[in-house]
Amino acid sequence: MIGFIITAIIIAILIITILVFGAVYKSFVRKYSVRYKQLAELNKKYTFYSFVRHDQEHVYDNKNFYDDISEEDYLIYELQFIQSDVIKQINLMSFNNEKYSKYENEVSLLNTISYDKETKGYIKGLLDYVERKEFKKLFKSVNPCRDYRIRVILYLSKINNQIYAKKSKTFYSDELLRIIKRLKNRNGGYFNDKGIWDSICRVERGKVSNKMRFAIYKRDGYRCRICGRSQNSTLLEVDHIYPIAKGGKSTYDNLQTLCHNCNVKKGANIY
Image (cartoon, rainbow, N blue to C red):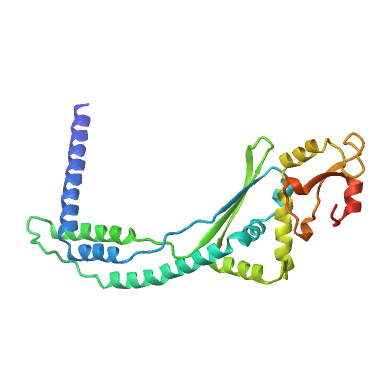
């Protein structure tokens, strides 16, 4: 028991000694290492643009929509509204990348360890080891974002909001620019790229959650707004008054309750 206590005391003393000596050596390096101070000044000289996130998240309570809509579909839909901001961020991160290359080049020139104070009383090998560690730590403290990215996360929940599935994908600058180029390929209000339009339609259709569907049924008295049949005698569906194929949105004022037969007859007509 006594031997254990003595061993513990010795270990504690060693740890304290290492910490004290480490702090003393670090303090000396930060005050008197020539290249450490040069790097500190270099870090003040270089400023970089901040990374502004445009990550996207959405929760579905309908498994069919969750399975049908991909992360890319959802990104395409959202890029309609934020593409200008995304292009700006991509350009800024590209600027960061170019500037960081210049920064790295200047840092590489600071390769000689020297001190502007006598190192007498210090173990030179240990002092240089601490200097290299502190220099590396200061160098790594400059770590700007140099490649823009957007992460899309789609969740699947139960009607009580309990999440039980998730899928995600990260899209980087090159892919984002390719999608934006496809979005810009349009004729007036129409996209020339069918894949783009299909993605937008899938996401717009998926905005009609189960909660929203039941709210529409309740608002319409659980009856078809064309023929008046109730849920007791037919299968009811939620219809877009102004169809998605013609630019209609999944908003309460553009949704109505129809029976299956009336919905099929209506098709892409507006009424």
